[in-house]
Image 1: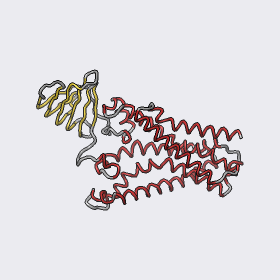
Image 2: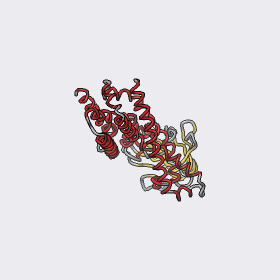
Image 3: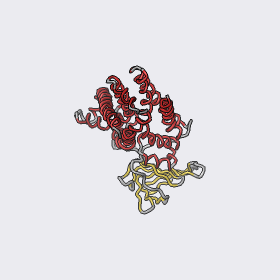
Image 4: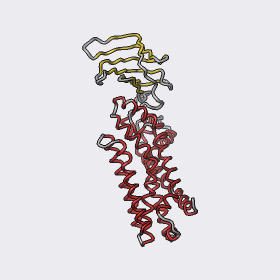
Length: 357
């Protein structure tokens, strides 16, 4: 990386951290103030619960504002360089928009990687506790005391749902096995108090078997289920794709979503998770070509307004595409990648056009 590249990276990182954590502190403070009564009630009024709540909510807040913080940091850096007449020196040195983007690639992929880890690891790890608390936007997802997200498994057309398990998912409680025919029609439902994996079989206890036909339910003390169901992947407990890791999403995709949601919903979020690596690169690639207006007399207000406007358009397009993918209007690949590719193509076209001028 050249001296110019190091200087820009250092300036952008400094402003990026200040903006990101400044926004996060502001948003989390407002949330704590708004829900202070509910938060304090979680631990009998102890103030320590506030810090625990902030810690759990921080990953989602940071992930939400990380890409826009990169955009604002870059715009502020370019604005400051213009005030000091250093931006003209950069262009006069022969640096092109394309070269500057290449210099900032390490920054783009590091911030993209952080964004991915926040969404793929930190948010799913915090989700169970936040659901148990049921504060703010988790109020509708609140779990009962001691309740956890259900575990799902599949064997052929059979689907198993368990309310809870041991860490290895080999001892299950409150089990329901939905047995369907090849046409997907439910033909039998097995309800058991517990299930224990022994070898390749599940031993069910306190069993009730319900049949599709108008036959009386069959009550059994025990039943051996020989379907080749494997223990659920760690963390694959929820049907909410935004709170799943990549491995959880793969697990649900491989099992057709267990009938909770259409499989394309999980496929869309899988593709979306991968595309997070490139969100900050798109922010940088759009802003750099716009900054060349400075060497042609463009105003600072024009740069800032145009950059923020394009960034806002990107996030609106990203949200709309994701919604269309979840509803099945477009394929998962298009839903996740169209905003990145469209704005990336726009940035490339601007860079090439400026290089020829």
